[in-house]
Amino acid sequence: MKNLKNTLKILPLLLLLVLVSCKKKNAAPDAVAEEIAAKELLDYYIVAEHAIGPNKLMILYFTEDNLAIKAQAHLLDGNKVINVDVKKSAFSIDYFGDGKAVYNFVVERDATGKLILKSYSFNFNGQGNELAYATMVKTRAAPIFTGLSYKMIPSNVPFNMINTGTPFSIKPRSSTDRGALLWGSSGPYFSELINIGFKTVDGAYMAVSLPNWKSIDKPIMLLERKNELFIAAKNP
Image (cartoon, rainbow, N blue to C red; front, side, top):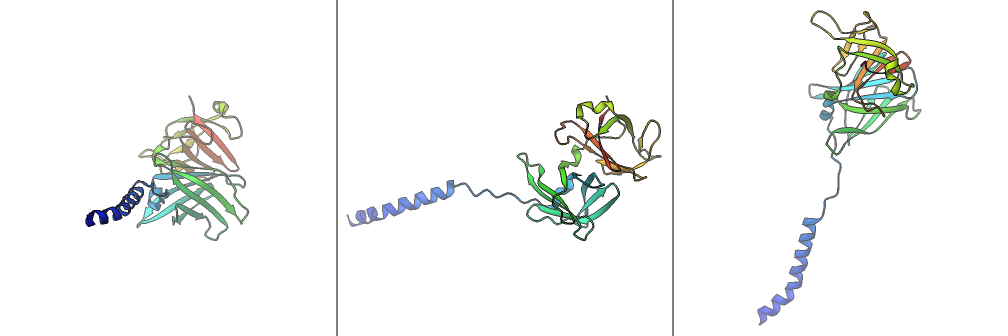
């Protein structure tokens, strides 16, 4: 009888412990965003459009050198190689290394696990964000552009008029010749930006291939010439 009384006394305590244990097991953990590692950037490239200024585009892709991740940052009139330090899924590109022209990017994963830009900005002399748009794309998703014919128009013309503009073609590189941007049968040679685009050796043009851009849900090429940005699509 004494043992039964003791058991009855501790039974509520046992039930409480069981309830607490079950609650801990069933409780959903606090959602914590998984931080992006710098090495993951190697599979991606970023294209950013400036809202103002002489340079319309900045093309950014990533390479690895002795375990260091480096950003290859290209403007029409230059390029820089900059070490990338990712902290809390964010990194900055100080283009001149003096704090004068700084790009800021925050990266996150979408529902499929692909990296996308959560936010972006460009600050020149502390004037605030001067980026009109930026996108992050897998390098293997960049549309093939060599050996194709295109038509282009200024980017302020509606996209449904894309095939009314000036035609050009991209001559692929061969074992005996360099790739070239051709207007008819002639045009400047170019140096490839991995598999995503090119810059002509005369410094006049820079181009990047994209699976989509802003509200345009089809493969396009952005072609920058001096102070102009053109959108081009495959010539049917």
